[in-house]
Length: 104
Image 1 (cartoon, rainbow, N blue to C red):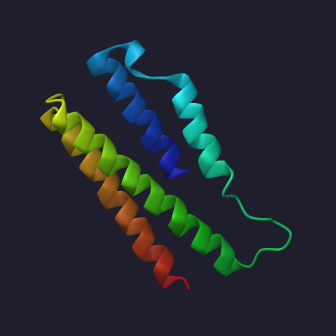
Image 2: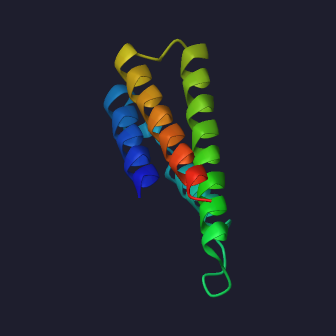
């Protein structure tokens, strides 16, 4: 899953830039649980259901990245490299959304 890989890379970058205390494991688990709670019934779902679910998850991921970028900018902690990485992940997510929409 690309979002999981991207999230892991972001967490590693945060720890590298700000130290291990910058990551709150409880908050991270809560965020992953919120995504997981939106899961669909595998037995009763259609292809369209899967695609629509994926689009919701991608949209949530883009909102998370935007909020993270804004928070780091406001705190004057956003480095150029971190900004570049975040915007690369947003671009990749937008591409995935485009491809998902093409499939339905």
